[in-house]
Length: 592
Image (cartoon, rainbow, N blue to C red; front, side, top):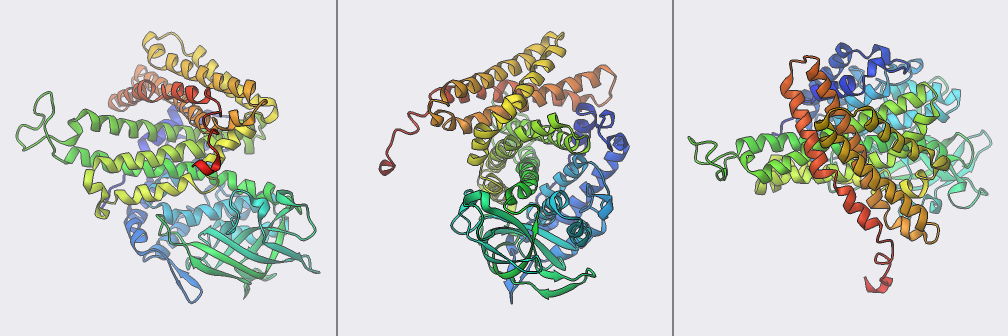
């Protein structure tokens, strides 16, 4: 069976040495001392390893089954879900007014990482519920919050998001699901939604669907979309459950991966629903859930890469194949372990430098979310809005690439199901697609986020990088290894932005043809900043006498690798962007 050990030491390093969470002026952060966060993360790691990891292959092989209109989850899921609820893992950062623990979002994210690594498909049931909870918490009426949130916090009731229809995915303005207003203020929802993760299952008493639909007579396109709460079972005034609502499962989708999660076709036939937020402003309310989900999907990308990497390292140390070109490393054995070979080392260093950089970027992003929400900080809100498509797109692209690289270390054994490596690649693949395919993330970044609020947020990011470089000069080796590469990569990114400004107005295709490259370029610059920060934190720790020299020296060496071997990719992306759209758009559609 595949192995997994929660990387709590690295998590603690990022939280305390790099982000210094307990020193930040964010409400609730003063309680995040090293002992407290360590205790939470150690316990999350135990749950991940002891409860969820053994069910990962079970969920993959058994999948979910639709029986008599009810979805049955794989063996062991129901009991594990109950353990999650009993342990309070579903309520960590939720509002105490509704039964939550009120911890900062950064702690929810760190704990979720271990659970997602151990069993991504299982953890999606709770993850979707958390997103639905957040949308209702922000946009729901006091009555809706009181009725639905307490049992969603505990996951006695779970939640979903219903956007996609058979004929429309990203272009939600084409949707056909209708919401007919009723005299009592409710609506009758009719239509079909597809690809609904956790759409139905046997682990909760009720499922609260958030459904996008159009009220007749509203504006055309996306401006006419509203959001509705549609429970599986009607909730009575006293909070008890009443009749089954007019919603059922058409089928469970047959998928490439995440087999343990019930991805359903949902049919709504005059189902009773309740408007959430303003009429025709459904996307505003749904984006609360979608933006949170995009951060969570970015986490899925690197969390699957983490467990794949751990297993690749174990295999590379154990598997004997060939001899080191510089002399036998295992003279008493028939061959040397794989890890002696430079190409295996390159592969593993690519994986290690990605996973640790992704963790730092994600945790930093969640501190921006906490600052935006708890401190009402508009600058933090703008910066995380800019970063969200980068975190979602870059981390999932590279997360899948890393899972495949880990599989490659196993050679033919990686292609055999019993090693588990196939599942990590298959499960990671969906993260590049759902919650907005990564091409859409790139278009959002270049087409909307760069110019948002007059471009002040991207300029603030450039200033942040510039200030970090200026403030940390003085050590020649550090400057050469970290600051100079970061400075060069940032200049490439700025040059790409300038190209868009100079050429995109004349021909928008010049900007959009380079959007995917720009998303990856910005991801690399973000990683460069994170690695420069991590390396500096380890240098400070060593200078202060930290006795864990191996950890910090390893961190610095891994950072040097990223800066030398990965960060120069910004030059390649800039060269592509500078070619514009002419070669991209040269062929007529008939010639593809």
